[in-house]
Length: 238
Image (cartoon, rainbow, N blue to C red; front, side, top):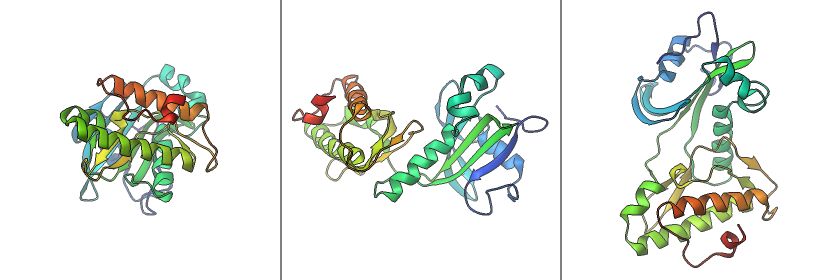
């Protein structure tokens, strides 16, 4: 599926290296179209209005996440949230990754955000990120022994607590969006897919968004038949 720009929306890099960003980008429009198109690389994940692929860009493999709003109705639904009077989901995801990296958390580096707009209205958006050697927790945890599961979940609880303490409210905190980097002996985590995140001042304390994060993550564990070890108080509060 190719997303055309001719006569409709025009692709423009809004976040990326100097040679890629801005109106004077030397990257041809066709290159952005091809990277965003379904079938341009190895498919990793697909939803109704988005897909993730591994593609080649600047002679290296990168992850390419494409959001599409193919109809006028799709674009109208997002006017106040994603397609007109607010940053695109791709740009918000990149903003989250940059924030996480600048605050000492492990996250893939965003390489470029490219948007196809017409009269300011978003038709499609593309996010390119560096590859990370990790696997989503919802795939890892079921394969592990109970002791390893408990070790990873304790480390995850510490990680999420640190995120909240730093002021990050994810609002999309599912096991499938958290990559395990390493193993149970020395677990590290990389958060991906955070277009709905919110920021608070450091040390702001628990609020409705932190409680919602814990509930969502706890529900994600329950889908696998798992519970938090040691019944942490912050999870109980959620």
